[in-house]
Image 1 (cartoon, rainbow, N blue to C red):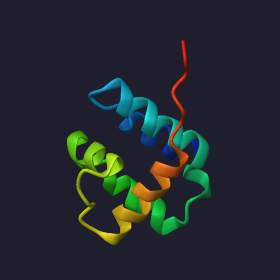
Image 2 (image 1 turned 180 degrees about the vertical axis):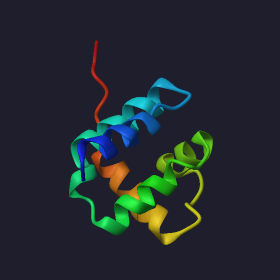
Image 3 (image 1 turned 135 degrees about the vertical axis):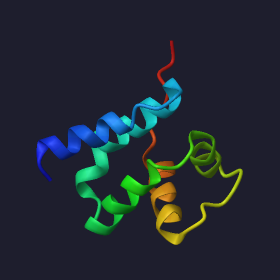
Length: 86
């Protein structure tokens, strides 16, 4: 993937809350290049979803509506950064 496309995905990861910004931007920086082409496409579609829905999926409050989203949410859950202790 070219740098222009990745930077546009990072821009789309800027959401309405700091938590979502950090989670999604860190995921793209650390893991996006390791996803399959199908997973990368699904991630782009995931970014079209509402923040509360994405957060509910990640926290396990509700189930994602598709198997593609479920796979990504599982990856996000296992790769999410640990909060810094201050």
